[in-house]
Length: 108
Image 1 (tube, one colour):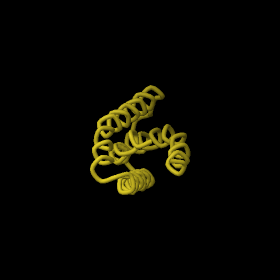
Image 2 (cartoon, rainbow, N blue to C red; image 1 turned 135 degrees about the vertical axis):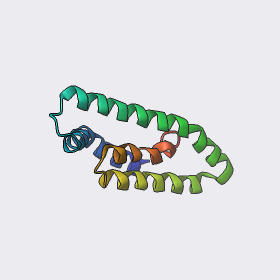
Image 3 (cartoon, rainbow, N blue to C red; image 1 turned 180 degrees about the vertical axis):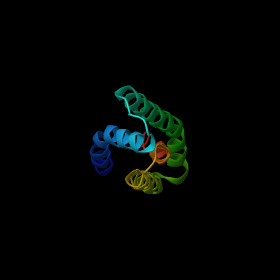
Image 4 (spheres, one colour; image 1 turned 90 degrees about the vertical axis):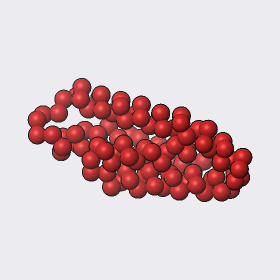
């Protein structure tokens, strides 16, 4: 839990900057603060939706395969999420990095 929390808290503050830089690099017109804020809001909404959908899945995994295997899956999903985030060069990749987080929410 501590490792996940540390990694999560380290990457969250850079996301608004990452959204701004990805939007700026993908569009030829000037990027407005409103556009960045709306996109970051969509990213957070998507992140919350993915975790809400994944919560029952984690409960089922805990019941069926146990806490040790589920813990390993959650940490692998977290690592996948951070790896995709680290290599994200488009907004689609940034949104894709949130899909593995489906296993994180309920587990904690």
